[in-house]
Image 1 (cartoon, rainbow, N blue to C red):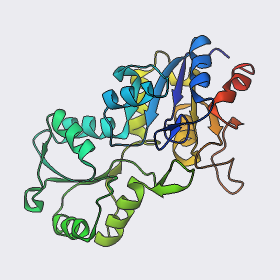
Image 2: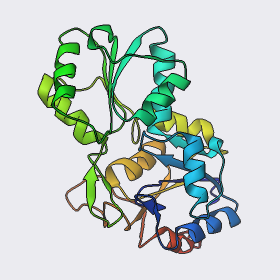
Image 3: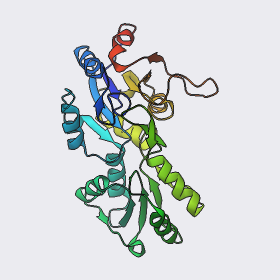
Image 4: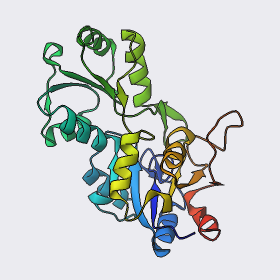
Length: 261
């Protein structure tokens, strides 16, 4: 099989909490040497593509903003398309707020002004945020989550709470599921990936550490899927319905997959 592109996850695949994972940089070099166009795709909404470029450079990986896609980017694009004149109330990190405002989206910290509620990762999440969500969603206001990741791997490999935990806390408080959750493996993310890859998704590879997001995205897009054991999931769930085509110890072992294709 000739593969044109490679979608590579970041947290748990290339690095953990900003610390490089052994062999990841070499694995990316091997993908590029084999002629694969590498697109980095993250469910973390906090950093802009430009910020990811800088973060990757610190661990020896060169890329460009055009080769980075995040749930924050997909969220901003959706809001620009579907809510161009609406005011967004964000329960999330300042980094995501900066991205939304840079895209021309109006944000407010006043719940009474909210036309849209967006929930996401933030270390500042507290009781007052749940009160704000309750007040906002007493009205028929759209409720969105940036991504479904309940946790993400910390530098020591132990999980830390992610956007999904906050989205679920708000959903439980207000008694209402979000209208949409962006990020992997959503249809919006599949479309965004397809628009950025050099070739069709069916001739591309996806590499990540999560069955429910990375591998599920690949299955939804018809990609060849590779699970790495450096993050959340160690292998297929025998009771689940998501099964990667390949399982490797780390991105540094990608040559074994490339040799088989």
